[in-house]
Length: 295
View 1 (cartoon, helix red, strand yellow):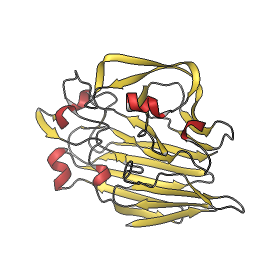
View 2 (view 1 turned 30 degrees about the horizontal axis):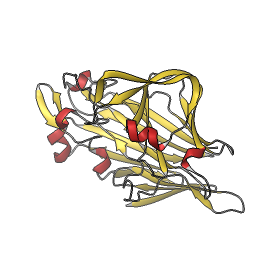
View 3 (view 1 turned 180 degrees about the vertical axis):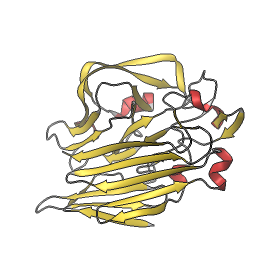
View 4 (view 1 turned 90 degrees about the vertical axis):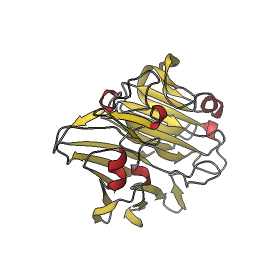
């Protein structure tokens, strides 16, 4: 089911399947509306803005150990393929909820509530996650966003015209992935050397697949046209990792705040030992929000 939300000249569309914000349109005075979110063209990728829960990335052999038992989950978990229920709704927001069911319990043996709220702001939107452990034992989980922004945004522009700009200069290497999508044990690629930006070119993604940073000083990043400076800023305070992904030739770039990541190729496989895994006590909850501002 598709649900419409709006505020002023901003409009969003939320899909209860996957709980995603699948469209975000801004209409300028005297001009047509600009769509900021990728349309899911299967020529490149049918995704748009999936929610990654209760894992982020790949598992080793799609398997994770919980309390001594092996469970199987596909890449990025199951939330993105589930139907969410409408928990609350207003003119400018929708709150959706996913709870455990027979399918989730077969691969993730916990009772939980995952609430996702998409809200239109004055100059953008916010997506909030509220994760509650409704079980009677500690619950490990990871969560992440995977928002695909159209890039370029306007006719006549090129993907190579855009830059990713961080709030502060960074000294950070990119985490490397194996061909199986696991965190490589062979070190990292030197990447940000005292600079606050990089150019996301297709050759780079052809070599790395995904650019991944851990522990940046910045808590915001922007995707900007180099000359006009139009684009978006994403604030991701509370998320310890960020990633960037596209397919060579595709007109989008995913900005991905993560709390968790793919399995390391040399890890034990125990869920609670995954990097940036969170563990909630029974009845405990965790809130995380990222916001997007039009520039």
